[in-house]
Image (cartoon, helix red, strand yellow):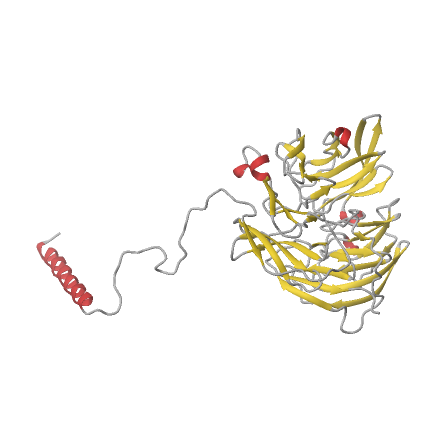
Length: 483
């Protein structure tokens, strides 16, 4: 560098220094200070602990007054068939204002369904502001929130958050959260009884933090069977039973084939005189003994039907046969379980794509007598998004369809039955009322309840009340006959 250039650099540096000192002395109203986290209104980044204290927080919000008839105590109701056996008649028609909306409340984004018992509505929710998995309890009659039990757990939104239905008895409520955290509380008071972290207990070596939960979070609803809670974690055990009073493990069924947790729920079935728990996992389908003499024993398994993602749960047809469903074009399999003494075998006797026969993308079909009802998925050809009915003797050709002029949103909404009535909610917020018969149905009424966003959650039908939701709102509807 030449002497002239050095002189220019020195002069420029001196001018800058003098200007800076003058600017500071003039007190322009701000200072050059050391950067401190939070001073620029950005959130302070803190290390997130890997420990989660399930159910640690509780809020009492109101008191239950009065009582209401009706219950819906678990996923698909008392008999696991999505049919209410209560005798309160449903309305035959609605006036122009539709069925009355008795109350509504806002929820965090998700698809979790409600359970109802002893005048209370229970629903699992995710509060994004608190980053909390939250069991909320409401009055069935008024919609008043009574209490909430919650705990902090962070994860990214992935098509919503919560998507399961609590299981309820007179004494207990059991939930299974988005990341497979199990919580048992007192049904009346919300007092915490016990918790289990299935990801920690049954983690899979080599997966991220031993992950067992499916990609779109847990969709498995807990099953209460007498004094046991039955769960299907995957990992080292395909199924396990927990004592409902203590939370202690009663038995585990080894997972020799490394099957994974799916979005389906365990369905009790009695096949060839043997009561069993049937579970459609990722990797195959299994049957586990539900009898005290050999509770937890693996009776049979098959990997001949193995879709990559499954949501709808198996439906028993009778004569040792049940249907298992796959999503994203996988279709349906008819599986037969045979018995020879104490030995059981499962055989896939039929399978087809959605455009070739009965199929279910999300909600589990409803069987009534010799007929089975479903809303067909988008990839089922001319039947897409239609309500259809099949005879169980021929699951390829429908005996009734709602027709090309009566389709239901994206075909992802729920449906439920009582007597000869079916209530169907499309995923855009219109509620339909059908009268069903032997392989046929008649539309009695329909009404746009609200501008729904992804109304995908299972509904609950308890007494004269229908409790339903979309991704953000919970509604209680009056569906009983008017006096």
